[in-house]
Image 1 (spheres, one colour):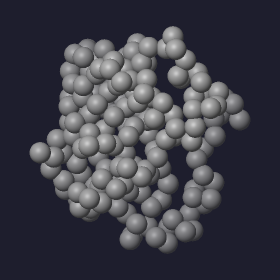
Image 2 (cartoon, helix red, strand yellow):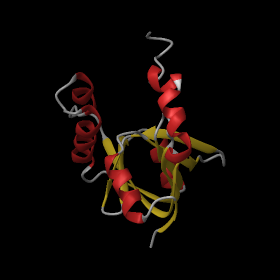
Image 3 (tube, rainbow, N blue to C red):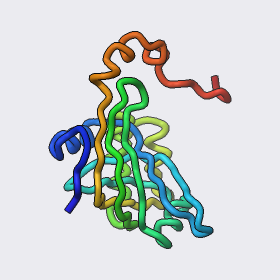
Image 4 (spheres, one colour):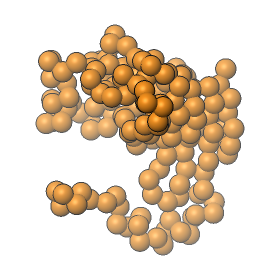
Length: 166
């Protein structure tokens, strides 16, 4: 059973997880005993977090050696809010292309674009990463950041652009 703590109820946390279209940040252990973090696209379904990535991504090897993860799904601009937690991840090939197609549609709006076609090409080997959360902690700074969010120049600027491809 998942423990829920923080600002939101379990239903509110699930609503956020279903509606937020931001990457999940996943932390895990690497084989040398260090820590590793990366961002992935996700969907929340039936109490688990589902992600997809290339079968040769470093995280796949890392998770096969140690399946413990931490994660955060949060807004990037004020007012800050989100869900963080810990759990266990599993890696499987089954259904990974279908999951990836769902994630491409969720994040890009369609699979009919250059990025979608690149990710979904037949020769690309994909895996699904399923995170079974054991604990979820929610926070929502909306009440104390309401004025900041309305007046903050960062909310007007939006996300930063690439220094390389500007």
